[in-house]
Length: 315
Ligand code: RUB
Image (cartoon, protein in one colour):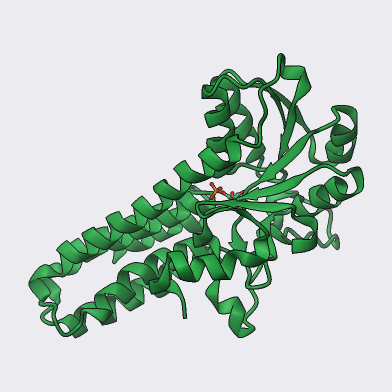
């Protein structure tokens, strides 16, 4: 348990960041823990009690991360469905099989998203003719841009620094290392940049998607969506369906993580209240399309495709 708690802390303290990364790490931590407790578990019931305990510890590490919750549910629900057939002896094998399945679901989604998204970047004679803007860091947005680059397409990227933890620097470094020209701006220059560079396409990632097609992503994303709306710039979200939170269809709202004020100001004068919401909602009416493994469509279609692609996670 000590190792699991240390691993959970890596997610909680943001040593591990980004929705897909958090999900992949969490299912690995569950699998590592299962190996540790193998000798203590005499029957399937012993396993389920412990696995549910781990799930609840990991769920609490980040509030706004359905990809992680879906991953842990995927493994544990599949095991529970086999309850009558499983013996303690084959549980580790099954956990590893289901973990690999979930990793493949994410990685296959990434390939499809890259393929579909890159088609939205046209062939142009120079970098100056197609400008993409992004906010924060998203491994799915990176996948699209890197794919377009390997296809020989030329474009420039505007990235925001993404205060307070500067995840935008991660995107800027990855894309620059791949030979893409990046212009980095402060978050408050968002509107100026869309205008000044005459941005052609805005691409962001997602942390969560609700049953109504609302997307939750890093704070600042709604502002960018509103700027896109006003300036008539196409605004797309690159996200696997696995970011869908099925509970939102039951009226349960996705929570928004409120982070430590210290990230903003480490020793502020007394009496100043500092609030640090990590994410915010972007209503479907500001989203031109969601780029997913099932194709590009309105974000409100996510529940339908999720049910079709991942029936074991739908209720
Ligand atoms: C990261 C963030 C990312 C999404 C998408 O937040 O908001 O845009 O998680 O990431 P944090 P990906 O740094 O607080 O985890 O597309 O890689 O899943």
